[in-house]
Image (tube, rainbow, N blue to C red):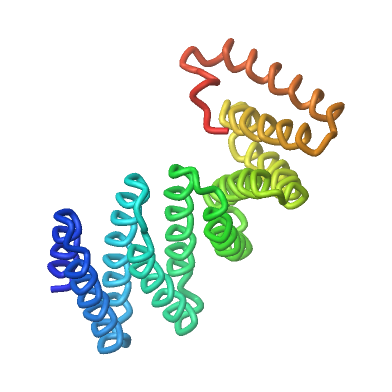
Length: 246
């Protein structure tokens, strides 16, 4: 029923009936909240319900952001899902899959805002993702996947802070990412992935240093980027630096 209400809301919004759309979104959210309240003692059902609310909210957020429309209603689905999984994690703190859900939720929402070029909006999402990933990494330090996502969150945070006049915070994030990249390199020695991460990270870092007035250090990192690019061109025939997300 909640999905039906959601689809009706989207349909009415597409034909310009925003008042009806808002009413159906309200009913969808109320139905989600009802299920969560009545079935909270069934963790598996609540996880499925939260996941459904998140996916609906994420798809709507992506659509509205791409159309440059108000996306506040989409965040209500996301925030409901996030809040519910947080409550579950408080009840079942040994279930790290819940923490993984929280990290994934925030990371995916951050990516949507990044793609919409709303970099200021990415900051709280990637901060949240990083905190959750740090908890997971502390619990399972040998899991390189957590480190990989932490690296991505820090790089994106560095970008977000850099373009919102918080350069010192951006610099701190990039420098933390340096350490993570070194740790990740140990899991797969000889892989080009570390070089590709370094290319992106050093490029971002050099740009930030230039903006901060540290042109000498920026030159050093630009030189490193050129050296890395040359090596990647030589070793990876599919490498194209222009396609890399900086």
